[in-house]
Image (cartoon, rainbow over all chains, first blue to last red; front, side, top):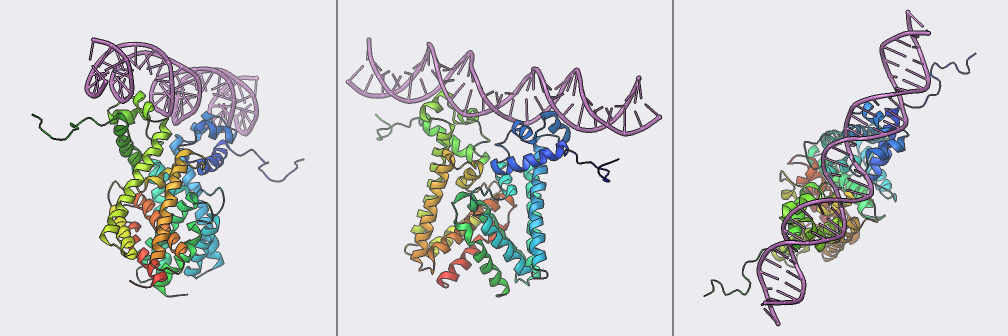
Length: 199
Length: 199
DNA sequence: TGACGATGTTACCGATCGGTACGTAACGTG
DNA sequence: CACGTTACGTACCGATCGGTAACATCGTCA
């Protein structure tokens, strides 16, 4: 007899999945350039050829890492959206307040996309292009939120919020907590209220 | 007869100076990790032993580069200070408006200090420590300007301005101009006026 | 002239980088 | 059992990394 009716017995995750998880840990904490493929495969418990069977190159793994990472951002957005349905202002402020809290963590490393863009100044680099692509999606979402709030100039408001977001990502790493990043929520309120009136 | 009364005929700059200039060019444009010492010495027209006679290591040259770079920031500050003596608000806004303009350059690479901090996540790294030290001096200056303007909460205003500055540094690289960085002046006005009243 | 400090030249070090050729164990299917 | 497929490991590649040893050359000043 079979101990479980499930057709899939608990199997070891595939080498590709283990590598993605390992890349998540190492790339985020130390940066992409700073981590060698040897360290990645050891941390994943696999070997180098397995990496190059699942991904075209280290850059390929890095772009996959960026996509995985950004999914966490959208998961966070889905959360604040569920907490404040039909209230764009509350959604935004919940995100910014949460960002202020997270940026106070001792090992905070900001946004992996932002970090990757600074690590790869060459605009033609595939890792950089993927990061820029994902960042533009964030701006589109912010413009949409600004529209929902009836902003005087939605794009201008979105741009201001982007400055605060990116500033918090960077400053959270540069200054010991509580640093300037703690003010990101208060500043966001100011920008929003200036264009939409207080909620 | 002598063609010039100057006691110093035009001499070739020292190897150290040429190396600092070469580091300025290459480190700023491509990042510190991305540039090898071989490229630096070739670009400087000197040889590797000359580098290691003038600097203890690549990290030593990198910290010298950060100090050189930051001097340009203070030169800029001296300029806006001379243009608007005894007017802290005008000084700040002149800097932020200039930042918005500079960040629109096609090859804009933001602030070398910020970039270095993201390149070296290890807080104990000497390059990172130097960058953080210089960044704190900027915050001290902003707090002083906020005090001059009679801000309700000078540290809070300084932190808000830092978020905008750092955001512009990063976003200027991430988005093609005119990107969100173009709004940094308008946002700074908003933050300042919220604490000090319109000028 | 002779000593000196700064620089250039050449050759080299060990370590690490990203990437690959090649062999093998486990598996399902005829 | 024989077979093809899939997944994986051992061992290695050439290139580049930051850094150094040993010696030659130059201009300057006493």
